[in-house]
Amino acid sequence: MTRILNFFEIEEYELLVFRIWTILMAVFIPVYGLFLIYFVDDAIEYMSHRWMFSAFWLFFLITSFFHEGMKKYLALPCFIGNFIVIAWIIWIVNENSFSPDYSTGLFLTLSGIAIINRTYIEMLSFYIFSFLLLFYAFYFYPEAQISKAVFLLSIFILFIVHIVVMRKRDYINNSLKILNEKLTTKNRRLKQLVFVSSHDLKSPLRNIGSFSSILATDLKEQDLDEKEKELYHKFILDGVVKMDTKLDDLIDYFKFDSIDIEVDNIDLNEKITSIQDKIKRIYPEENIQFKIDANLPSTIKGNDFEINALFFRLFDNSIKYNQSEIKEIALNYSSTLSDHFFTLKDNGIGIDLKNKDRIFDLFQRLHRDDEFSGTGVGLAICKAILENHKGEIWLEEGNLGQGSVFRFRIPKKM
Image 1 (cartoon, rainbow, N blue to C red):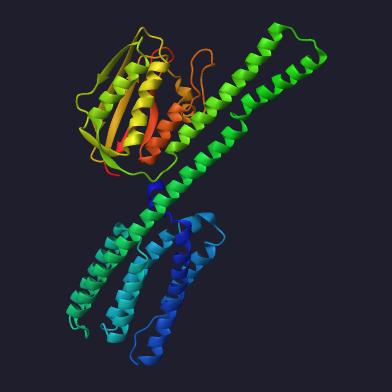
Image 2 (image 1 turned 60 degrees about the horizontal axis):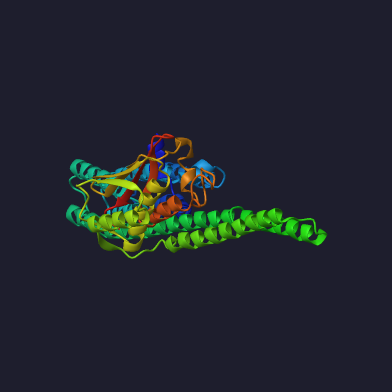
């Protein structure tokens, strides 16, 4: 049931279209009936039916202003109502021997209803239902005044036109969806920046200010020995270094803030080999063993600078947070029709799964400065890079003292 409701859920910008449609149906159906009664002498008409249809559409129109559920799922009663209306109109047209006046009303109704179909599933359901009803009516009333061939050809042309319209609508909807996703990501990163500015960056500033005040007071009172001077100086210097490091890392993070990236074909094997060599140069005294899957794709699509930073930072994290004598990094690969999947496993200190979301936030650290270096920006950058590539990263396995397993996805098409 939930899946069905989700299918009919409409966006805010679609609401106006469906409300206008309910108004048109509420007005058009009875007014057209009155028109036929007035101008067609032998019209077989049931105005009570038409007023019932008008009341149906008005009920859901009015309810959509007061009930959030109806506002959100207004497409559902419209979809059901449209099928009921089609069946009734074909019946009344058949009752009137497919006279030109009634057939014109049928054609106008089919044209209008088809326009508000939002997906190919809705459109195909609509046309299959309409064609079956028409064939049924033609079969039981073979002497229809209107040319069946002309009528069916008109419906077929309408079908082709709506396919073109649907493709354009899909393009617009997809563009809006992409823009909305980009805006959501930008807003989340902006909120993160505000939080970082008000907490993480202020912390070293407060320390600098506090010890500077103490130092100034003690110097004024001449109640300070050399050891205390050195200690205060050390605290102030540490605050300056932390502030400088965090600002540098923040600048580094926002190098990857652009969601619109240039995509190239990247030689992945060459890239991984180059990063391994760089890691070994950075940590010359460490015994590092890489186990790289032989089935890695020869090329992937992505931004060369960002993909390089992604794998480097993941490898670097696996070494930095690792106290084993032999530091092992295993990179495995799998794929689906649409995505590349990479799994990075190490034998480092491990991460408790309760922190699986927190570790990807900016400046979030799980250890004291004297235990492990770093500011907690590496995984945040990895997450930003993968978001830029329409991918994702998550902690697959994590146990303290037993290493970590990260898994990430990169789409094959960008």
